[in-house]
Image (cartoon, rainbow, N blue to C red; front, side, top):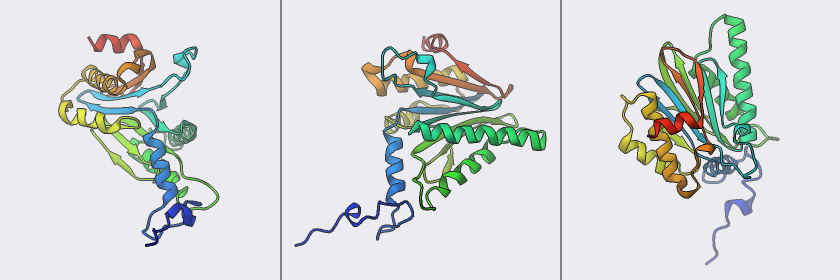
Length: 239
């Protein structure tokens, strides 16, 4: 009996605009697989703010850890981290920074996180619909404080976005989410959130774990200011 021809051999993955016979956009699915292979990134909502933690994965022992940026400030009250093809993430995050600045100048007010996420997802969706370009191989976590409330969003290569209390993307995301299902509590403070996130990252990375490769930041609800943390801070909250 003749075996069915694979979709790839039929050429359905040559462009993001071509549906396969069973209704799949294979280029978009490949982009999602690229995200799975990226370094882990974590976001957590805490009772007093929101945190981001990311693995920088230093590819060379001579690389200066501080030169590898995995968490970005988008606006005073918004931060982001990405996993997948980081060159794609850098472009989208720079666009988000520009959007936030333009909103401030135009309306004399800060842009809320959800509106910014929608705009970035509109860009992502467009690259799944038009020929001549590939989808963005990146997922981005946006963390912010809107009207005193911490918020966390995940954007997918498809252009979809979801709001979370706690989530992880990239390498080991399934295992990290299982840890959150068991140990995450909404009444955690920021330091307890960092402790949980870093311990989850340590469990996934095992012998490769090193605090020098962990990037972190938080935004407190009552301040609405993006603040980076260093290895000394993380070492203290882990005690």
